[in-house]
Length: 379
Image (tube, rainbow, N blue to C red):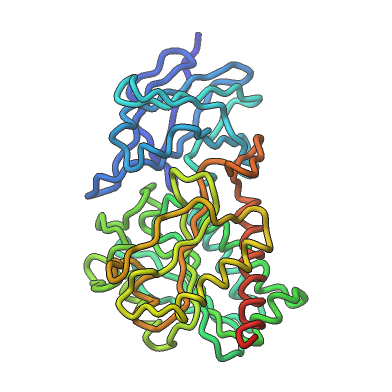
């Protein structure tokens, strides 16, 4: 029997092959550079048309978020456009935690990933297309440590300063799929939500805050091994130039509303996290966030408020985290949007689970909720 082949030497690839026996393989996930984070995987399997393959990823009890594996099915694609789910089982007791993926491809190759990848080439296509639209300005905020550009797109004629930024954690690719949906909406001259937001707001959009980690196949860090979402109180040019340049630009524009877009490994739901616990917290300030949350909850069944992170006690907010720092520094209504790697517990879709398509649809609902939040601000 011919053995399968496994490759990961491409944009965002990450896997180490320990052994291959026919159509079975034992694998492990590489850690982020200069970091102990390991969770993101992305690789290609060749030589398997019409035959079931069995892929076992070991050592997952020591991964960044072991709670992400129970109830999780790996993402799989044969054309790198449509991503479905492959039946996967987690065994905590075997080989220090194993995820076993079983799949029978119709063609001679299949791609597997922790979530549908969003390549840097697709990122550049997204930015280029948006930048050609009327009223959109592209700014190169900085050069990353690996020499890549950090892109900012700006549009709108209004007074409200709105910041949308994503993929501080590069393995949370849901965030840039969300950005693709948001930019498709905002650059559509006929879309009523886009027209309303561009009239009321000046929008500042960073589709990918961490190009280096994205290309390297990292879960949470940049080229230096820095978790960018722990750098906001004191960013530096040598460790976190991405955050430094974004925060400097925010200082120039001010911030009225900010959404930092992420993915969560363990919780099977879409939810928001706010800024409870910041030093300047007031109930009036917090009500801005809670009102937005209620609006979004009403607009889409893909969002919910039952599952999420616990609220931070008074005065205990971590100001190295973006949402807390932005709310404190600028008095903004700031929030973190979290989307799952798993399917939604209360609204599942078994074929794809949570998917790129649902990320993009959610983005328009988030923008629609923002417009309603602005329109009803004085009500």
